[in-house]
Length: 424
Image 1 (cartoon, helix red, strand yellow):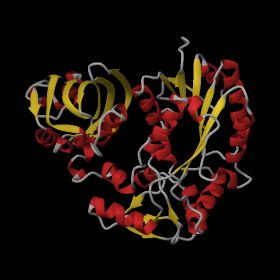
Image 2: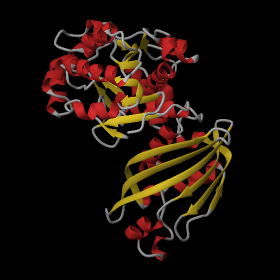
Image 3: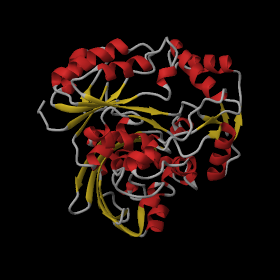
Image 4: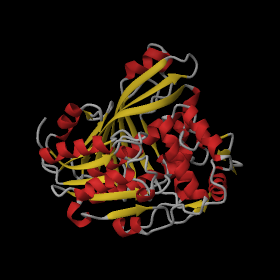
């Protein structure tokens, strides 16, 4: 592997914060190398020191995400830090957790922080985020039948957006000297009860979302039973929910604004991105929207894909399928084109993102792959895209698309019957 000055190794590089940290760093012009068991730039396994040594080759800085949901991992992290020292790493930003110093003795959150503070071969920054807003949009604290069920009582928490965590992490990795030895407690702008969370999400989505309290032991056992976390991680779930219910949830700290020069995103802001208005019309395209958001993180403004488009945005489909429009002008026209996508195709994943940014010309090239299924037949669909995007005043002003038409023909027919099918 070739050495590269200032290369940042991003552990958990395909995860919730890691993928965003990598995008933020690349937008800043810093080389970022994502690492994970699969799907990243390099393979990384906490149980395979050889993979760790390879991933560290030529690395100057590290975004350290410990191997949760394990509870005991301090020894593995210590061994990794030994390798990092040998590799010449000069700074590590570590994603810890809120009040790690108060964590149960059967966990290693505090031990890893202490280990970092004891090292002198490199500087460090510790991030202690509160509960992440994204929990409500995935399998962590899912909204099931418009109900949020968690043992929190009337306790409040200053929920934080993962995008803000990533932005702070990228800032510390871009300027290690300015953030050396610092610990940032990352929170949202206000502490909210879960009832208020449900009301906020309901207001944004137009759904009758409500909060339902539950017995803590029952809830922990149910979460463990799903297989989402190992049995010994139940102690962490108990600790975190007990803290909120007992009035010791996170409170706004202002650290995000101190680092980024702007206030943290609100829960309403997050909800508008996670559940955009009329989202049912575009739900089949959500993986596409997500991967574009990752690729353009920090470069455009807007809570949802269509919000990032200029009113007069020009879309050109250079390599496409017969019958599909070659040119569409205007944000509304683009939305109308994509509105009924789910009638023909539903995407379930998007990956293999590569970002190329020409800062002088304000042009970003995104390479990515989408995976879906044909609505009528259930046939699997995979296609590779290159999208050339011009940005003006932090909005997308021009979009040029290139795809593999054969992939479309394979599921919709050769070639004429593919003419009316959506192409994404």
